[in-house]
Amino acid sequence: MDQVFTGKVALVTGASRGIGRAIALALGARGATVVVNYRSKEEDAAAVVAGVQAAGSRARAWKADVADRIEAPKMVDAVAAEFGRLDILVNNAGALQDGPLMLMSDAQWDAVVRPALDGAFLCSRAALRPMIGQHSGAILNVSSVSARIGVPGQTNYATAKAGLLGFTRALAAEVARLGIRVNAIAPGLIGTEMAAQVPAKVKDKILAAVPMGRMGTAEEVAEAACFLLSDAARYVTGKVLDVDGGMS
Image 1 (cartoon, rainbow, N blue to C red):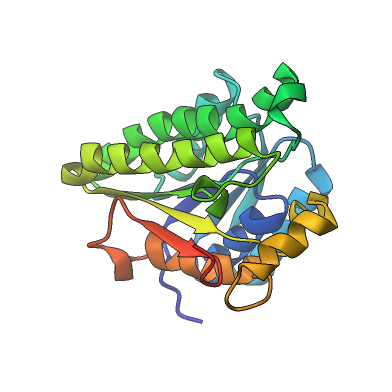
Image 2: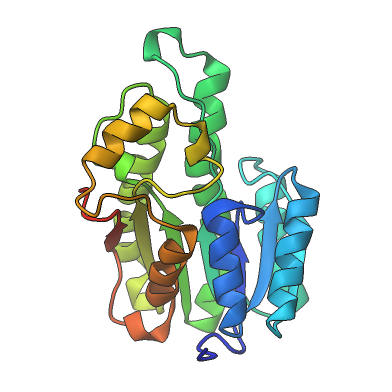
C-alpha cells in the first residue's frame, strides 16, 4: 500500500470503533502517525493503536471528551506539541440516541448533537493554530446520509449531521487561502456497531432505498476518507462525498 501519509500526523476523534476505527487504521496503513481519540472504550482504542503499529506506523491513544470545552482543545494542543505538527483532523466522534421528538429528553438531544457539532467546533478551532503555522492541513467531517433524508426518530442525529455540512462549507471558504482544506463524507447505512442499534424494520426500509442493495462497510468509507485527506484531492475543498451505495 502506498505510504501517502508518511511524515504526517493525524488525529481521529471517536476512533475506538466503527468508521473512526477504520479511518485510523487506513491512515496508519498509509504511513501516518495516528492519534486515536476515545472517550470511554480504552481497550478498543488500545486495539486500534496496536493495529496501526502492526502496519509499521506510530500511534497512541488519547482519552478526551470532544464536547468538553477544556478537554478537547487541550488534547489538540498537546498532540501538536508532542509530535511537532498536526496535518489531519477527522471529526468523527458521534452517538445515536433515537426517539420521537415529542418524547426526546434533553439528555438524548445533547448526547448526539454536542459530540458532533461542539466536538467539530472545539477540535477544528484548536487544530487551525498548528495548521496555519504549517500553511497546510486537512480537516474531514464525518456526516451522514441522514443529513439529506428524513429518518423517523432521528431528529437529533439528522440535525447534528446536517450541521456538519454547513460547518464544512463555511470553514472551507474561510481557510482555503491559508493552505487548509475542509471536506466531509456522508456515509449511508454502514455495518458498524452504531447501525446495530437501528431497529430491524427501519434498517430494512433504508436498505430498500439503496440501489446497491446492501450495507456498506467501514473500510469502504475509510477509502473515501483517505482520498479526501490525501494530496490526490489537493484541489478539493468544501465538498461532501456521499458513500451510500447510491441512496442519496
